[in-house]
Image 1 (tube, rainbow, N blue to C red):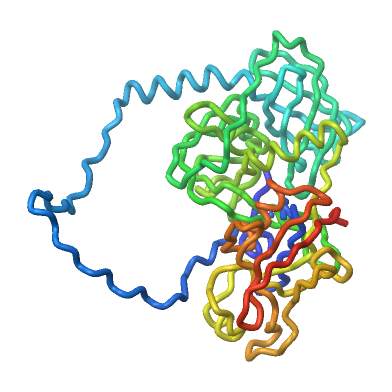
Image 2: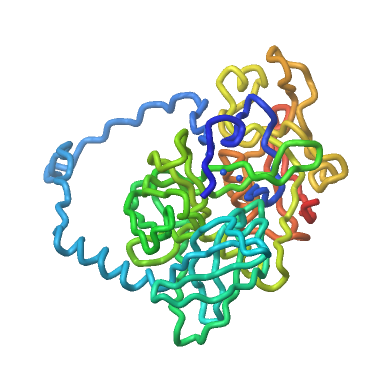
Length: 397
């Protein structure tokens, strides 16, 4: 389990800007806040319409709280654990000499023996031991990994009738406040189940993959949860109450190295996009846009840039010769009252007609919905007008 500490690892925007590359997941990603303040003028008050004589008055009384049957809720968790835990494995990573490097988690995704885990769990390993909840221990073969999204796939040769696979859910339907469950092997304690809620969506985490010109590619579409995640949980599933995987547990934000109520999981829709390529080719090729941006502009920065709105992706840099550069996307070039902040850049407000309010939203769309060679249309605000700019995505360098 990777432990994140405050500072550049979590995206210090006072330092280098995030680099967007169509996947910078990856992760285009490890937790940033979305800027959602609107600068539009207040709307005119709506006219007051008389109620029909028979209309009932509007009640301002809050709805009564829903009281769940504690016995039924308890049984739901028990049944889910018994159904899913056989699919969750412990992964021991060893040097060729047999020295154990790390211990993480993973989960079976099909009857062919494919197991999803984190890249940082298997990184540097020569041999892999996969331990199942029923006591079965088998060697595993690393098929591929992606350091940006922090994903990897291991294959085991086990008869299909001895495997339990867990299905993926749709992470686009996940909501803040939704109950979630994590199962994994924290501190080597196999089959540990913890419960929490989704604390935030569309977080972005910085990867260890260096981008051209400096900085790092980022992993977007990260789910934040307060379900207890500790060292050893890495690579295990984050589940909804249907027992579907909505995320792959990745890291925690902690000053002590143990759970402090802020954990991060790679959204399942990102996993579903990347894992098939890891199985087939051993790697994933990200679509590449070639721009950099600051994901969280302050009001002072927005005023200095003279931006017409407070949401959108302000382009701070365009990679020379990249897809955005060839399409004519403009980066900031004019001095502003804030040292190091250049004005005059494009403000991307939509991609393929889909509004983007933050850099993370745009990266998530590129990673989950586009491929190399695909043409996307950026809607940008420039010099008081709006432009539609088609960009043909390249392969990330």
